[in-house]
Amino acid sequence: MSATNRVLAGPSGDCCFTGFRHEGTPIGNKITIANVPTYFVESSSSKGDSEAKRRILIFLADVYGPFYQNNMLVQDFLAQNGFTVLGIDYFMGDPVHLHDNEQGFDRSKWMEKSHDSAREVLPKWWEAVTAKYGTEAGYCVVGYCFGARYTMQLSEDDVIVAAALAHPAFLNEDHFRNIKKPLMLSCAETDHTFPLQSRRIAEDILVERKAQYFFQVFSGVAHGFASRSDPSSPDGRWGKEQSAHGIALWFHRFIDESFQSGRKEI
Image (cartoon, rainbow, N blue to C red; front, side, top):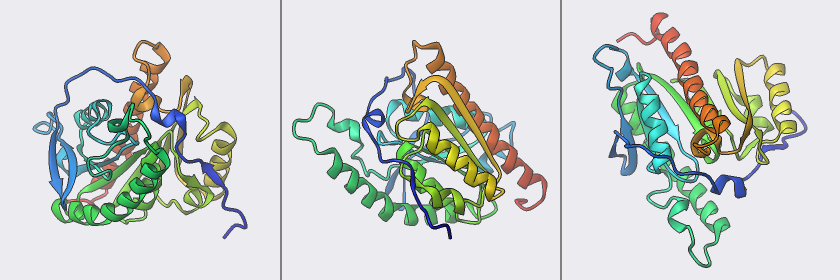
C-alpha cells in the first residue's frame, strides 16, 4: 500500500449543481427493484440484437438522479446502442434539483444524507439486479460525478466486465490503485473537481498498475458536460454526444468479447 492516498476527484462543488436542461421525450419506465426506484429502458433494436437483453448497463447518476430529464435521455441513448439500462435512484426520490430556490437549503447536509442513502440501498439493489438477470449476463457500470465512487466499488464484483466514469467526484488514489476492471474516463478540460494535475496522477497510477484504461478529454467544456452541457454550444453538444457514444463502444468491446469467449454463454 502506498504511503499516500490523496484526494484526486474532490467533493461536489458549484459546478456539480449547475447546467442546462435538455429537450426530448424519455422512453424508459420507472420500476422498483428491492424497493428502490429505478429507471429502466431496453434497446428497441433487441429483436435484431439477441444479446441486448444480456448487456446490463448500470447507470449511477449525478446529484440530479436517474429521473432527471437529461439523465433519462442519456440512459435512453445508451439503451438504443444495445443495452438494457438500469438507473438506481439512490436519492430515494430526493434529488438535488427539487431544492432549487429553496430558502435555507443546506447542501452539505443533503450531500451527507445522500451518501448515507447510497451506501444503504446500493448493496441490496445490486443483489436483486444480479438475482433477476443472472450472473451469466454481461454487466457494466458507468458513474457520473456523485456516482463515480460507487462505480469503483461496484466494479469490485467479479460479474462486472468494465467500468466508466464521466467527470468524477469523490475519488482518491486508492480507487485507481485498486481497480481491476477496464476503466474509461470521460473528462472535461476545465474541471475544478477533477483537475488536470489530478487526472495526470490518476493516469500515472493506472500505468504503474498496468491497468486497462482509456481517457477521453474534451476541450471547450467543463465539469458536467456529459449530462448538462449547453446544447447551443458546439463543443458542449459534441462533447456530450461523443462521451455517451464512447462509453457505449467501451462497454461493447468488453462485454461482447466476454460473450464471444464463451464465459457468458446461456
